[in-house]
Figure 1 (spheres, rainbow, N blue to C red):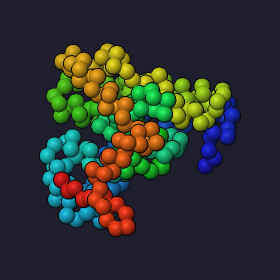
Figure 2: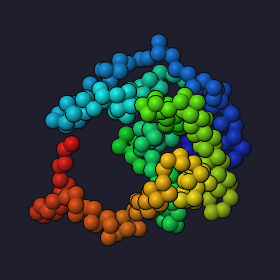
Figure 3: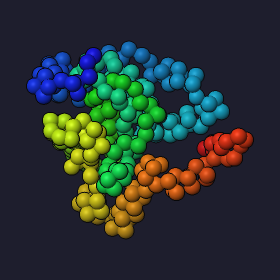
Figure 4: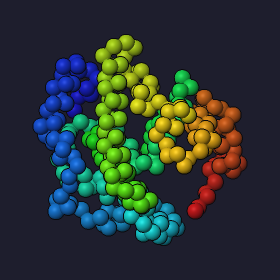
Length: 254
């Protein structure tokens, strides 16, 4: 499959319209359990082959505690389920586990604060909509876990693809003009930029302004090693133990 960055805007638009014919946007919200190609339990057990045997009982116990905990630990199950349905064919490097708790605040190299993914240990190539679907489903499961009204969950699920559409449009506008592809990867779109004032407008009144400011300050330190060398060095020192001829990360089992 050719990388579409080399294609013209007209070719990319044509490709997008063709993807809608392969699978309509409305169809992305439906899944037929009868089409499931793999057993969920077998999928989870197969993953155990590459996990630390000593931690498996803890993992299974946590997943069995609630639907939300199961959902968080069953990224492979959902990927298998989604693979049994038609997809857009617009493949990207997915997060692979884009549930709501795997997003957070990050400081960009320009010192802007952005809301973005922070977990990539399940990353794999696949249709872009799989990450969108996993995020949307996580909002519903998390809302049920916290006993929120279905209407609130539905509003959150509706807002997510709208935000994604705005971000994609922003990136597309950069690709169509100077400075080109690099900025499309590094510059957060309007939907991703965060501030204390902006977070206040979308946060329940029960959350104090002080808590929001602390969240923003924490996000300001979540950046690359080059941006915060002293903090990164302290983190490595705290998480590792000295071993000849170099350092080694300590095992901190739950």
